[in-house]
Image 1 (cartoon, rainbow, N blue to C red):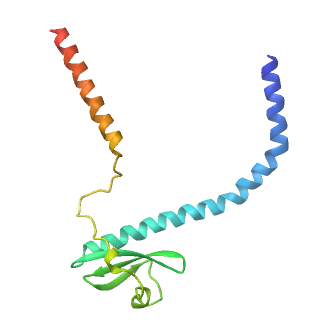
Image 2 (cartoon, rainbow, N blue to C red; image 1 turned 180 degrees about the vertical axis):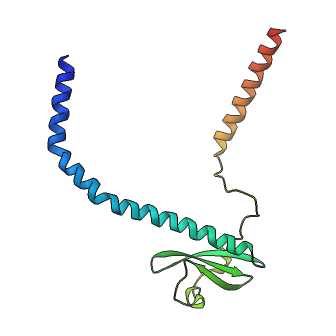
Image 3 (spheres, rainbow, N blue to C red; image 1 turned 90 degrees about the vertical axis):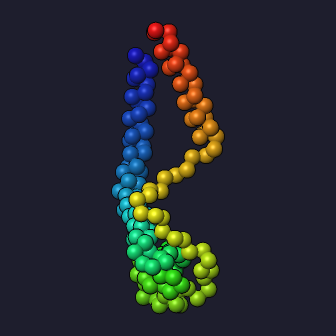
Length: 145
C-alpha cells in the first residue's frame, strides 16, 4: 500500500510541476507537426501524380529535381519535358539546365504495387521456418494415421 501512495504522490508532484509545460508543448507543437505531415503527404502525392502522368504518354519518364528547396517531379515524353508536379512558375528548360537527365525513372508497369523488399537474412529465415513447419505438420499427420 505504501508503494501505491508514494507513486501517487510522485505522479501528482510531476503533474503539477511539468503539466503546464506539457500543455504548452502540445498546444504549440501540434501545428508544426501537422504541417510536416501534410508536406510529406503532398510530396508522395506529387510523385504518384508524376508517375501516373508519365505512364500515359509515349516513352514517359519522371525525374526528381529540387527547386528553391522543394522537391519537384518533372515528367518527360521522350526527351522533352512536358509537366511538373507541383507546377512551378519557372520554365522547365530553366529548371533542367544543369540536371543529369540519365537519372530519369520510367513508371512501373500498370497493376504492380511497390512493396518494400525484405533483406536476404529475413527471407532465408522465413524459408527455414516454413520448411520446419512442413516437417512438423507431416510428422503430426503421420502420427494420426
